[in-house]
Each structure stands twice: as structure tokens, then as C-alpha cells.
Amino acid sequence: MSEVTAEQERIKNWFENTYQKRGNLYLRPKAAYEIFLHLLKPQKGQNLLDVACGLGRLLEVGKQYDLNLHGVDISENAIKAVGEILPEAVAKVGNAEALPFDDNSMDMITCLGSLERIINLENALKEQLRVGKSTAKYCYMVRNSNRATWKLVKNGMGLKNEAGHQGAKTLEEWSDIFRKVGFEIEQVVSDQWGRMRIWRYLGLGIFHPDYKTPKKGFVPLENAYEFIFVLRKK
Ligand SMILES: C[S@@+](CC[C@H](N)C(=O)[O-])C[C@H]1O[C@@H](n2cnc3c(N)ncnc32)[C@H](O)[C@@H]1O
Image (tube, rainbow, N blue to C red; front, side, top):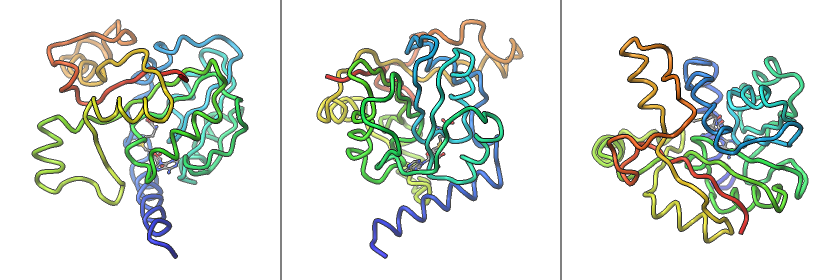
């Protein structure tokens, strides 16, 4: 077994165990996913692909828009769960580096909290360009390495989850990679989950009433916890 194959196997096993032990608790609640499709402005009947779809949270939101749902994840446990909640979705076990979907077939592609988990990021991005139509829109949520929590705690104190291939990059690094492989960046906003959580803890309702619309907040974009990128093909 090559080193890459062994590493991929370790990552996959980490997610299989995590979904088995923690299930739904591992991921954000469904309402936290609405912002991603809101930013992409979907139209009824379009083809949506969520790469590394986990338990299908984003696809559940896609159902509200009457989209044709497609998902892929390396975890069998995750794809089994998607099949149970969304039997109409085309959900496949597969690697983001070799997507089991046709060229030019998708109108919208999302990949949330997962690009940093993939061994060869460029391969994965090129695959997403391949399966996207010329007019396709993309939404990615990726982790920022320019945060104290990442620099001092996760990376600095060695608390990074190596088994789950946790990673992070700066705003500039993510932007450079996306442009280099062939994307144009339309918009970048801060992840809104922190704001939503504060509302929840303050007892002001589960979510802020306007949780779909990105707000600037006090933290400058470069220091956001995670970035949400909206992209299209160059
Ligand atoms: C942090 S979870 C995010 C799941 C989902 N995108 C969400 O936001 O609810 C990361 C996901 O990436 C998947 N994953 C990791 N490496 C992958 C790969 N190479 N190909 C496909 N999926 C992968 C994991 O199985 C896991 O479901």
C-alpha cells in the first residue's frame, strides 16, 4: 500500500468512526447551512453537487429549493445516512479527487469544511471544475490559519486533528490556489456560525432572524474563523 493510500485510509477511518460515535452531533445544525445556497441563488430544477457532503445537511437545504440533489463523500456511514433522509438524492461513496459524476453536469457545487481534509487539493478543485457547467457557481467554506485559535492552539500546541487531516490557510493562500486552478472569485465573506451561536446562547432564538445574510461583524475578514468563498469558472 502506498503512503498516500495509507493516509487516505486513515482519514476515511477517522470519519467513519466519528460519524458512528457522534453522528449528527459532529456537524452544525441544518439552519446553519442555509447561507451557502442563499449566496448561490439557486433556481428550481438545477443540479446541485455537495462534495464531501457528510450527513447531507446542505442537501437537505437544497431540497427546499427543489434542486436535483447529488452528494459524494468518502465515508460509507455518511452516505448511508444521506440515503435514509434523502432517498431522492444521488449520493455516492467516492473520493473528491475522482468525482463519480459526468463532465459539465452540475449548476452548483459546494464543498464545506472539507477542502482542507483532502490530500491533493488541486486534484479535487480540478475535478469540481470538470463536473461544473460553464455557468456553474461554487461555494466553499474553508478554515483560516490566521486565527489565534489555529496558530496558538491547534497548530502551535499540536492539537490539530492529524487523523482527520485538519488543515488551514490564510485568505491570500486560499485565494491564490483558487485562481491558479481556474476559478474567478465573486465574493468572500466570514463564516456566520459564530454570530448564530451567540444568539443561540443568549437565548434570542435558535438563530438570528436574518441568519442567511452575511454580516460584517467586528472581526476583519482576514481574521475570520472560516471563509465562505463564492466562485465561478474563469
Ligand atoms: C468536517 S466534515 C464536513 C461535512 C459536510 N461538508 C458538512 O459541512 O456538513 C468533512 C467531510 O469530508 C469528508 N471527506 C474527507 N476527505 C474526503 C475525500 N477525499 N473525498 C470525499 N470526502 C472526503 C469526510 O468524510 C467528512 O464527511
